[in-house]
Structure formats: structure tokens, C-alpha cells
Image (cartoon, rainbow, N blue to C red; front, side, top):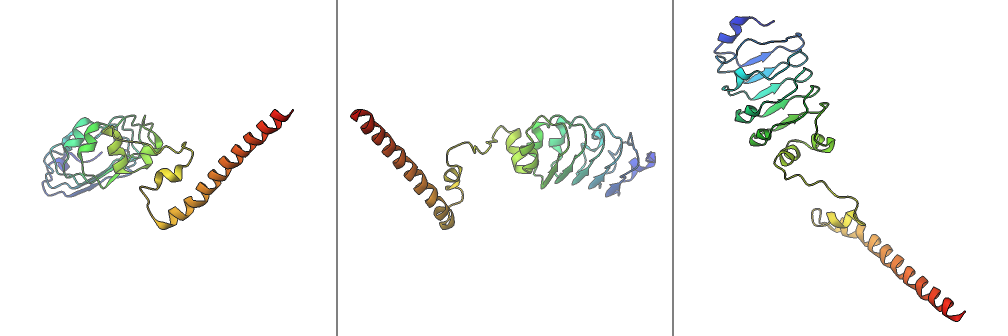
Length: 188
């Protein structure tokens, strides 16, 4: 348990209390200088609302028992790093998309969002939360062709050239087979 007097530490800039089996925290509303809140590997079940009015830059609450990320998290304008790996989080609030995060770590949570989105980084998660996520469709006949506009280079054009030639040869071979089969069928 952290000392209650901690909540009156106006000059406290960093609170690192990892590996302490903490289940509760004192109110941190008067810790106005707090920039880093590192509470990983504890037994906390929520992100403390008492930080809502602070200018926290980093929150690391990985390896806890957090089930929900509050909607107010999007109000933490100065937040740059949010570490929530290995918790019990199922959904992320849309308000996360309001933040200009450089890191968002949410791996190993039972999230309902696709794992490719989780691993995709901040921008991919932001796009997903805003409804702008478009997964790459690799089921098209020539997926390299669809990437050509994004990755335009001479090397890709050279790589696609044999694919085009092979496809053209296959079409020509199929056409010849049809013509040959028709000719054979007509002669009998």
C-alpha cells in the first residue's frame, strides 16, 4: 500500500510503484507535476480517475487486472505513452483516437478487435476506433498489383513483369486448348 501522504506531493513528477501487489491507490489529484505513472505488475482493476485532471505524459499499467479503459482517458491531452499490455481489457474507447500517442501497448488482452489491429500500432488502432480501418485484401488474384500504387518503384515493376507474362501465357495456353478441343470435337 502506498502512503496516503503521497497524494499531497505537489512536486512529485514520477511515481514508479511496479511489483507491489497494489490493489488501490491514494488520490493523486494534488500531484499536479506528475508526468510518469508506472504501476505495472500490480493487482489494480482500474485506471485511477484521480489522474483525470493531471498532465500525465506516460501511464504504464501493464500486468494488472484492468477490465475497462474509461472514456475520459481521451481527455488526457499530454498523454504520449499508454501501456496496458497483459490486462483483462475487452474494448477500447473511441476517445483514445483523440490522443496524440507515440505508443499504445494493448497486446495480450482479450480485446474484441482483430489481433492484426492490435499489432498494427497507434495509427492502425486509431483508424480502427474511428471506423477508418481497411484491412489489406490479399485474396485478389495478383496482390502485388494492388500494391503497385503504394510502392511504386522500378524493382516492383520488374517483379510484376514475370507475373503478367505468366498470366498472359496461361490465358493463351487455355485459349489454344479450347480451340484444339473444339477442332478435335468437330472432326469426330
